[in-house]
Image (cartoon, rainbow, N blue to C red):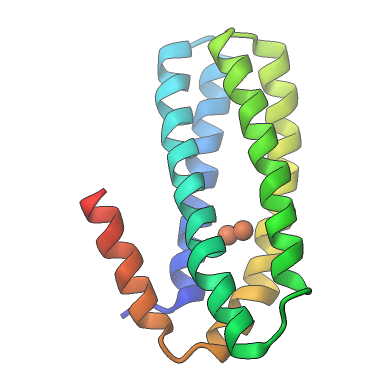
Length: 147
Ligand SMILES: [Fe+2]
Ligand SMILES: [Fe+2]
């Protein structure tokens, strides 16, 4: 059985790795490879955000009654990151290296700060307040196998 902080933190690392691989492929002008890693990253990130927004955050809010705090900030940051992902998608489709690398730098910084807040603060709080955390992780794993 895996705890929420362990599972979700591992997903952050997986996303980081795909993201970095896409970035270095763009830097090398290897667009086919960049696209493969980029698509992998986008999918992982979208799934991760969904698990947070549709499962973990609502359950945390329900358990604690804290609805206007950290989960709202995280949702807002997800929206900012989704907008950057859209811009990066466009730069990728245009094979626009300079724009891609500039946006990629911005998203990387935003993502690191966001992930750190979740890992240091929110995931431990979620873990503390949800009794069914390990079951939720099992559900996430099952969903990703069937996807
Ligand atoms: Fe998040
Ligand atoms: Fe996260």
